[in-house]
Length: 339
Image (tube, rainbow, N blue to C red):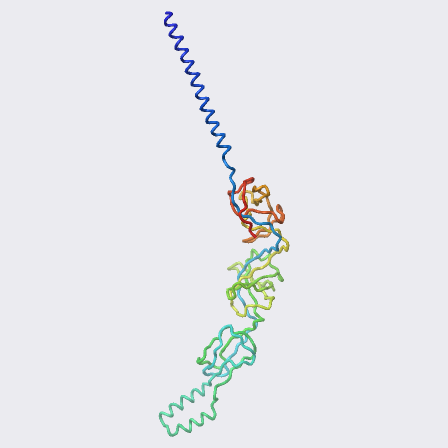
């Protein structure tokens, strides 16, 4: 019995010793892991985002309404054939300038053409008597046809005939337009018509002269309505010396709806919108090397620039790259400052 008690005491002692040793080993492993984690945390670098940025500037800003239209000429000068016959010497092309009194063409009278044909037939049938007919034709027929002269100056719109063509009396030969009478008829959507007023400044562009802006103004809002297209026509007059000297030319009219001469402007790429609230914000690159989210209020905007009415001041450096990787307080490095 005593022997059994001794064996039990020894087994219990060994069990306690084993548990104590196990506890020491586990504690050491935990300490080692904790030390390794602390070293990793201490050695992990703070990430820095490379960005581009632009300075907030003061610039004039405009709000524009873009509509399509065509040129119309109020004053047309139609040069007509003085008699029936064949047109000779007409070399004008669309866009050519013509001055008053200029010789445009000659019309060979139809009767003279018939007499010449009769003479040719007579020379074949009775050559002896044909000589007298030829002399008579030479005395009375016009030598070079009837002269066609421009009765006013203008630009050729569309020459309806070509040299050698046979025309009837008073048929149109050339359509001239007075360049100073050309205006633009544009069509404004009904939804935007309340923004348009007579006297409003405008800029006209056309593929006929790429890259050139024709200054203009709204002369009148026409008292008519196109139900099919839900538009109303406008009359837009050119205000500069340059104008489009062709009727029916396609144009784009940019109406200046509003203007701010000293707007606080940033690039459109710097602006962010909260889809849930509809509010706007930007990220300002601070002197501390971090991005600072800044709520702003916007005014006029276009595809490239945005007016800021509250939240920024001139000279602030707004970040224009990085997108939704940006966050408030993020370390940033400005690689390039855009102008």
